[in-house]
Image (tube, rainbow, N blue to C red):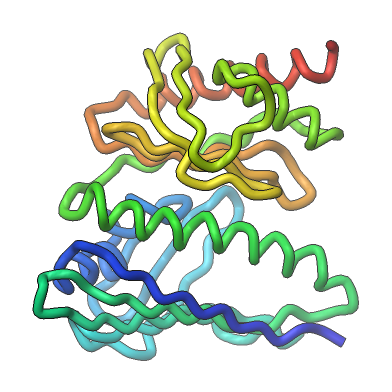
Length: 250
């Protein structure tokens, strides 16, 4: 049967249209709020690497700084995904960004994937808004950490919250302060928490945790300061594994 989908978001940000375009149409810009490692080849192709998922997405509209559209072409089963960004500046120096994410999920088992896309999309569009309001013009080093397998997600989220010095599962608006050996002190605010994700903003980073789709706990971090990515990757993997294992054995 399958599922046609379309998500539309209108983001009002304090950044200029040029800063918004830099965030959505350059590899370093996309790295600073989206997932994985990204690159943009001229006005023709957007590439992404997130674990084994490495789509190559042709650009079908390129009108800087006003409009951008790209996506994964339809496959043999009809699956496709497209992203469109419409940028409109305001006299006050702020910008309205309209995002349209559309596509098709094949098969009769689309519901779980659709829910994951919905919850994940909420994280990424909220992160983009937060990035443009707090970090516009700065570029981050992205890190993707595939952590431990999780059998009991409610318990895992509760354990992660306790590892952040909270009483339980993180919630939007929570203030966190905790130490990660090899990284240092992490102090910031949970800018978004839903059923499947937690996003934390600090003075120089986004730290985000996600339920892997049929997989492990995943961290997708963006660090705006100097960082030893390899050392930080191992430090976060150790921290995540320890936090989750405490919940599973308690």
